[in-house]
Length: 290
Image (cartoon, rainbow, N blue to C red):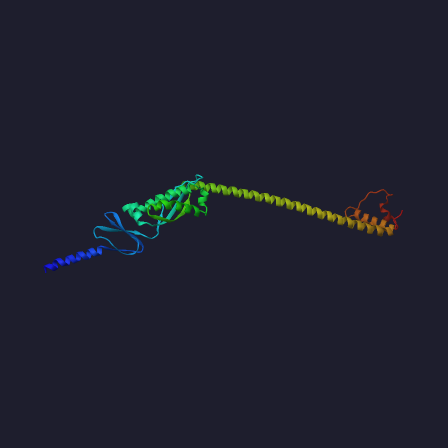
């Protein structure tokens, strides 16, 4: 009975000690076995691990790809046009032993803060070496690659591997935004005024050309009509001359009748002539002679 009283607690202590000596490493993490703060074992493969109970402890770190959003930072490109940049990075803990030595007990949060400092410094350095147009253009993948490559070496000293760096948003500071909008508006107004001026100039050239074409066409038509009319008059005169040449007396009679018709209009039939005037010869006799 007395033996059982001592045996059961001993067995319990052994079982608890055995269980506390075993730990499980998940496939999403890596583990370090520490003894009095010193690294004695690195467990990177998933599965069971062993440690000395009470003396050794297990520290686990995430082995997945992690994301880190940087606070907006202000950069000054080479053309002194200040910009506010939002960026984020993707990284992973590549060397847990070096990571522990670099950040100590601060763990992943301390490493993230130090990575923030590295990324901010590299972002300012890279973006400060180019113009704002290069940063604002769609072709800025090369700039993000430069930032990543510049941060890789420093991050490696922390046991981190920087996988990617991306610029999410690039804007002007609020105090410069209105001035920039006004400048852009003034530039667009100037371009619109230039377009309108060029349009008016082109319209005037087209109207002048159209007016000139109208004058040329009308002149040409009038010239051709006068030529045709002259030819017709000449032909008419030729016909009349031929017809009247065959009977001169009839020609004289016809001319007199035409003159009477034009002269003796209604309301205007009073004429003052000398008695011996030849105008009314055909009214004095049936032959038109005195």
